[in-house]
Amino acid sequence: MSKKGVRFLLYFVGLFILALGLTLNTKANLGVSPIISVPYSISQITGYNFGDLTFVIYAIFVMVQIAIHVKLKKNKKIMSDLLQLPLSLVFTRLLNIFSAYIPASQNLGVRLIVLAFAIICTGVGAAMSLSMQLVPNPGDGIVQALDERFNKSVGLTKNLFDCLNLCITLCISLFIAHRIVGVGIGTVVAVLGVGRVIALYHHIFGFKIKDLI
Image (cartoon, rainbow, N blue to C red):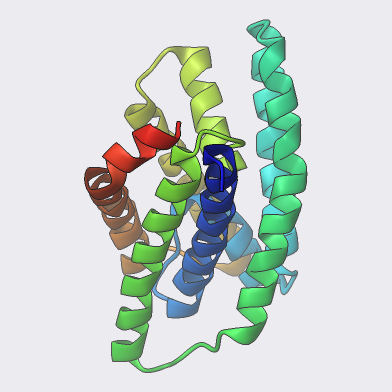
């Protein structure tokens, strides 16, 4: 298989693993990653489909990216932004499939194990898909676009964007459900753990990735 073929294969495998990780994160019921906390909390409060709500949020992310790139006159990036929409549709269908077939447990020990697998899968999936430098998922794409707009470091932009998502989630939870939904110890573990898994992945496979790019 050609290098380009391997890149596409690893990219889609990465997205598959990422979707599995995010779903496991919700099944642990200990608090979800900031990037999906808004659609997850709305889903839990209203009963609407989690995957469909995630697609709506991702579509908003894409629109923001397009607006930023139009303002910055980076028209070449708009096509990449638009390609995130069909990618998001496929990705959120995977979320629905995994959500339908992966059961939840009330046992705390099992939930902690599920959370650990969720962090590993999310980190590995994100690292695999991002390192192939193809179409970013909207959660990463909007962070990159905001970084370009405000000229801040990607790490700082990511942290601030996570905080914004958590604030929105807390407001929705407290004002509508009058309780905190989707935010917990699992959220903290996700924020700290996913980045470490990504760093470890690049430490182990970084030299092989350079050969593909």
